[in-house]
Structure formats: structure tokens, C-alpha cells
Image (tube, rainbow, N blue to C red):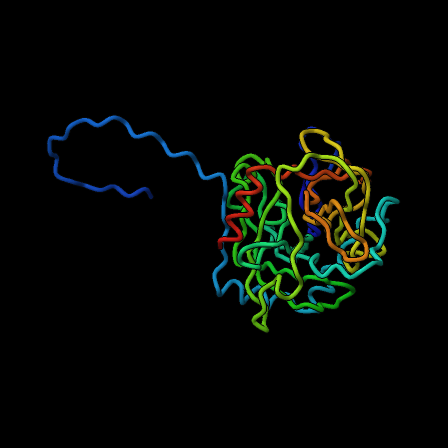
Length: 303
């Protein structure tokens, strides 16, 4: 799907209408015994994008309250559809807006979720919120996570993204649209999940059952300023999982929670918003989190 400044969802390829000098060493020639050819090592299934300390400082400086307000008012993807409603329950501190400058140089945003991790610093989102698929050099920059964002308020601080892990299959072939980010401590020195907690995450979980999906959709009248929710039963479709949903661009990377408790705001992350069925969406697709997703999460929690 063609990118616009609001970072709309990609569309499933073929499943919907419209929607980045090897050195040469000279050595003395000496007789050697021919050795058996070495077996090529299996390619690393995880690709990691890293941001320098200077880049992270610049990201924090870039995302002023005025710039955040401007990015929301700069786009309107039309009326919010009937399957998405503003979340009015318990504050979801773990879910937030992920602001960044995309590969075209445009300010934009996605959504993300703080999850349990060994380093207390991992955010799950979609791979297309980190880099373009099938294009290793086209990566996004100036990336910060704002948990609990609501109507301009940043109640739990701002966390600069230090590194972003994605499946290498996304970098090469636009396959498996999920990512795990590692963030710095905030300005108060707090690690992410010390500040907001972390949601459980499940891998290799069978598809099915009730799911609640959340995200900061760029549809009117909310335009990324409020957290919206869809809910429905997940089922397999096109090699991914699907729920009925009207979230649109800006909600990319937002969480899918199974066993969601509306009183506590806790659930188990089973996927993230990844793709739409059309420009007037009625379906949301998310990846099935399997062994590669676990490796991506593991890489992030070790960073």
C-alpha cells in the first residue's frame, strides 16, 4: 500500500483491493591441504535496526507537544467505522502512540504495547512501523513511544527507541509484519514496565476466541488523539488471523488482547494490527505469533 504521512496500514498483498567493499586480503601463496567446504551458516531470522545515542536525543527533541498536535491535525482518514469505539474503561497505561519520521521524511505515528520482558523495556508493534517491507534501506527514524497517550497528555513519560527487531523475512519479502522495540529509560530514569507495567504475550497460541484490538486510528473525529477499540472473535484467514474491525491508519501495531479484563485493563497479547481489507475497513488482520515472533521478542529483551 502506498505510504502517506499518516502511515496507514499495509494491505495484504493479493488479498485486498486498492489499500535500504568487501575487502581483499593479499597473502603469500603456500601449499594447503584442500579442506571440505564449510557448511553455510543459517541466516539470522531476525534483523535489528539500532539508533545511536545522538539519534535518540534528537528524537526526543523532535517530538515536541506542538509537533505531536500538528501530526494529528494534518490528516483525516474519514469517519470512524461502526466496529471501532473510543475506549472509556480503565486507563491502558501499557498501550501508547509510537511517533516517528518515516522513510519519506514525514512525521507520522503507529500504536504499540509495553509487554513483559527481561529488560523491562520492550514494546510490540508492526514491522511496517519500523521499516518498509522488501526494502532494507528504507527505515524510519526519530522514534519515541508515549504510553497512555490521550488528547495531548503524556502521563507516563516519553521513551526513545534504542533498537527495533523485525523478522528478516519482512525486510526481504514483506512477510511477517511484527516487530519488537527496545526503549531507553525515560527522563526520570524509569524503565518502561517499571513505569506502566507490561502485558503478557503468548506465542504459538491457537487462533480463536474473543479478542480486543486497540489503536490510535487517524479517523475522525479522533485523529489519533484517543484510543479506540474493536472486539470480536478471531479466526484464521489468508494465513493470518482476522477480526471484524474499523480501525485504520495510525492504529498499526496496536495490540490484540485475548482474555482481556475490562476492569484491570490486562490481557494476553496474541497479535498486533497489521493490515486492512480496504480503505473503508471492516476487517483487521494480524500475524499469528509463532517461533519467529518469539525470536524477535527474545532479541529485543536481550538488547
